[in-house]
Image (cartoon, rainbow, N blue to C red; front, side, top):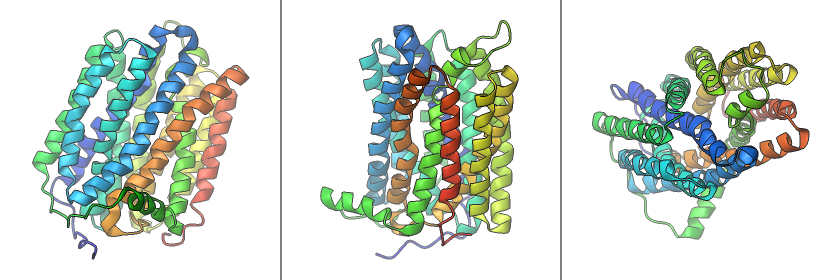
Length: 404
């Protein structure tokens, strides 16, 4: 089957709608997993909060890993993205409702697994919009629009999470409604050309097709680099609330939930600057690898700051520097990945495979983090390990040959 013709320009209004769609998604991820879920777990068993949170995050991430490429392959087969975006977004509401009702670690795990499943249906489809509808020469700008969803969504998620820290059921429903509303807006306001429908493959053939993407040299190294950096990032960020409770010396009278609401805007402002600048400069100079490697190294440097000091000032500096590094990395690396996809007609499936590099490390990260914190008795060793993983992620882009 021939690849679909490349678009010459992005559709009118597509980039702002990508921003809205990704902002809602990241707001849910940050507000739920980073604030409400951590508080809910702590309320149930304060003494085992680190181990329980690691278990819930790890098991639920397995569902993210499975559903992302599967949903991508299904949208490839149907030739449509919008129905999957809409279906996943609307399903977030009942998933968040069930999460709000959960009152044991087991029920929270089941409910958040369901939440991860429907959100990754949504994510797989909306991620595939860029290679489907945006020309190569504009993908830096499009990836910047996608990347800006992370800082904007992080601020929104942190503020809403803190605001509803005493009423998590309402908070969960609000996040579900936010994603559902974004899904409706995106699908109503964007028109898509139906891609050629794909014939159904046997399960064995589908598994072989997933594995075949990783046999491509450049795609494999892009996958490895993303997985290493994300592993380091989530080993720390997943425990942000507990780090503020147990590692950081906060100013007198400041609660950890309030500290999250201070840190997220700082990180997000830095992300906005580096995402826009990184995406534009990578288009301007046509140098993706340089920006990806440099931003990963900057993230490593940021992670060493709280390892050397537990002061509030240190965590503020970390928030800014980490935002600069991670924002640029995600914007430019997303553009780089769309340029090393093995087959244009399998874009959603292969982006789903790459998203295993996002979800897969989240399976491992909570277990690694909880083990390191338990054995070392603190978070310093965790910061150092995360920095080493970021350096490895920077080095992983060097072997890529098809992109400068």
